[in-house]
Length: 121
Image (cartoon, helix red, strand yellow):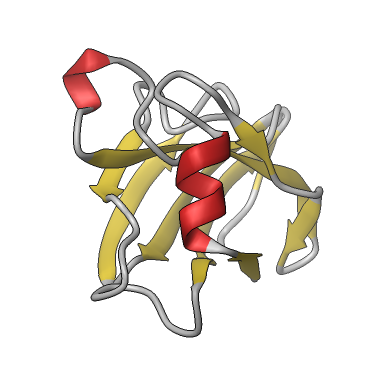
């Protein structure tokens, strides 16, 4: 799935540190109701200079590949519907975005379980 947010300068101006932008709900490989919580200027002082993101899906345990602003990370065994403490990426700027937009890309790698039902992924 790709979540594209146009207007990098506006995004950084309108969402100061600690302010969150939620994505629309989406499905990954037919699994659940996912959504992102994006903090363009970081969630708190510890994330100064970084974008901070949570991925939520209550009741799912999974591994995701997440790419933002030219950086990619593999997030394993997500539990409790989030990345736990969250994940930080480089803050969006003209050198790591295309067409004045931030793109959040998520790929479901493996589903460990949905609710109490196990899945082979």
